[in-house]
Length: 308
Image (tube, rainbow, N blue to C red):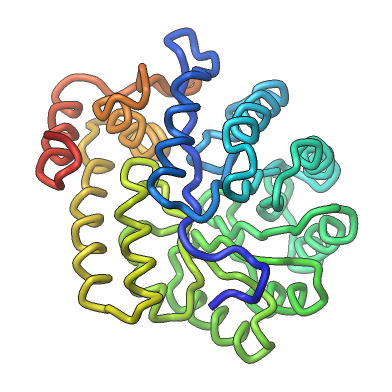
């Protein structure tokens, strides 16, 4: 389990609803936040990849944080993504996030300019030294084109510069090495998986919880799975994971779309069909899912028991 005082359990990365004119849909966001808390989540991660964070202006990022922290009102911890291309820009996002009383900030490695291991370590070291809240590393090589070193993460955790890791690397071997190294070092890090359909395997590897984008659609399912894990009921863990894997098929229904346009787009479409979002609008230059793909997503929601 995660070290005392560190986050564990189910911490969904918020999907952000937009109006048809691509402004923040505050009412839909309020419904989503309450949906997650009522589903029993242990925390909320705002401004991650599922939030389309890199598509938002600084003004929009702050509006999202202000809305989310206001609706949460201290009921669960809120992590804030501070994702940007280089260290000084990330530090500015950290300052903004700290104004809203977040429980921690989440940063990737720098990107756009090519950096090596020394620069990446320096980046996280600077963040850890300057942030007034806990810093989480976000391992996301598909977007930042570099894989974070387990040795570096555990070393920085042991120094108190990092509090946790959200692992969305898709590298099961590296994830297992990270959790093993973390245990050997006395578990300075909370280690969370960002992969929706292998949370059961991540638990077996030593994960403390999950940050599932699909948790926006079915938070209670992930909460039930985590509770079963804590209780050692592995049959229930598998049953819940199998159902959630079937639900995750929504991301494979869109035709002609890739990346967030397909994945986040499917989540938004599902949330609209469930009555939580008013639209399934995406950030520019992405377009929303339409037509037959919507009907297929609706069918999966029905077959997995979320929609009557």
